[in-house]
Length: 596
Image (cartoon, rainbow, N blue to C red):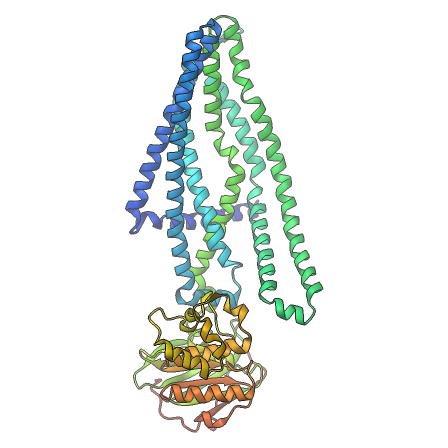
């Protein structure tokens, strides 16, 4: 019982957070647009109610005409029904368009909000490192869509149900009248009957559907994991084929799908129970009002038209009162998606606290005013607290070329990430020149989908230098065969080899030489000759840039002013004092730093 209460409280908290998040659409700059959509949607619902009431009255007229064998009235009723059908279709189309446009605008706002929060403060990177939440992209794209679309559907459905119930309860009350049974008079007996019947069916559906929420969410998570594994295989198809990993990948995919199937079976079992009840209800619902009205019809207290009008009204009220139960399976889908979106947004809110911890365990990034880069008492740790680099002080002057070397596991890449502002775990300060333009060159450059020209200029959005300069740099970087393909749209990460992508990374930097170039083994896929040529180009094309280059390979020392040597060692816990990884002997050019 305690666990159930805890789960209920957690679910309520997540729903509250989703409401707070999504209601931003109503409180920000889009509030007027949201209000107009709601008013328009309500107006369409009211218009849609008019033909429904008219059809209910048509039932009395038509069936009374049948009972009286009034041919003229029957023909008139048929023509009237055609007109009512046309009006009903028109109002339904208007309602559909208004509802779907509302869903689109609200989803657009939520998607932009989630994407902005995901990309802010490099949360997307920290989430990928910490693996705190699975499939954030699916939560933004798919769960965000489901959460908004179904919420609007439900709000529309509930409002429509209330309008229908209010409109047709009066029909049941006045047409049904009272029923005297064994000396007992029951006023409005059809209204009482529809309320009792709807309450019983709704309770049964909700009772059966309650466990469905967790099962639907588990199924959605398994489906997302399965899709991710398939896409991961596609992205690494060449490597898998080269090492003969076909059978291993097939087994992994089958294992993942087994989890999907297992969760599907759990959902199927629960939905089967709900379908049993809903199918029985769909058969009984049209018959029950006829059975209840039959005594008064046989007693001559009700005409055939009255009976059919009351039966139609009974069904409308029953559908309205049963709306929640009839949509319980869709409610489970909505709740699962809303919970996944809320969980992601909560991680955005609490990421610093969850991932980093106390303020003293954060690397502080600030600016220097002397054009140099300063490491001030810098300690770098893994996100689990394991220390990698301890109590380091260093100064890298403007325009200086520094080579960072070390064995595997010594922390070269982590140091580079910290300097680039990607790695927050640790302590101390990193001071970078104010307003400095920084370029980061990883082992595998990011290649956005689109034209090669766009990939070459990424992430800038202003105009590229003149075409002749672009072509010259491509040729100089060993990519003359790509000159004619600059405006060709491709998935370039799949088209270009690893070496070509690294060459394109150098061309990207040479097109717009930055103030600081941070390099994390950007020549690992190149031969020595190509590596030397590219480093010569970089020194010639960006002579004033500060270069910090992490590498394991032996590089030509003439490209660097000095070298920092890192040595791998058994890392102590973060709270233990460690020997300096960067000693003053390794940094002969140290000078007084403004760290204190």
